[in-house]
Image (cartoon, rainbow, N blue to C red; front, side, top):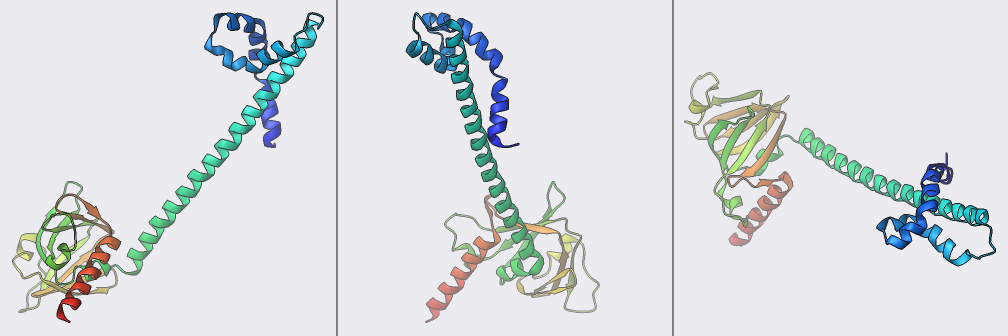
Length: 246
């Protein structure tokens, strides 16, 4: 059904309203009631067409048609406005979904990216938060200096982490899974690689191995940052370092 037909059909619903308004419009005018705004078309027609010789039934028909047409136009306009607003919401929703999909795709294609950005950082603390996720505290001085906000550490939250262990490079030692024992080693991060779904972070004293569904990055002040923002700051830090050596 077209919008015009819908508007015309819905306007019929206003017939009882119109009949009620027609009977009491004069009373509304005399009392100055704000409800008069609903009957402006009828009132205008009444004032400009009214003639002592004009039959009352004619005024009723003209008033009804005027009121009906105005209601139809209002409903038709409302439909168009709602359609535009709905389309805008849908477009925004699609854009947000595409952005989320794009972000998820980037993580899926390059799960090592975050660790590349934390190259030369040192893992100094690991703890589990209330959601059961591991939160890694990382010190990365040269990138930290690129931020305007005052803070000391980066916090990396590993969501749904299923593997977190350390394989020491010295001696024939089994993988260490206890977090406190892992922190006894020098966890200065120098490189990263992947093996199936396993991410292997090369540190000064061995390899830190982990698997997780997703991650998020915040500063120790609570400010959340994106991977893109961290990448921009890391690039800025590298550029500054190169310029200082020239």
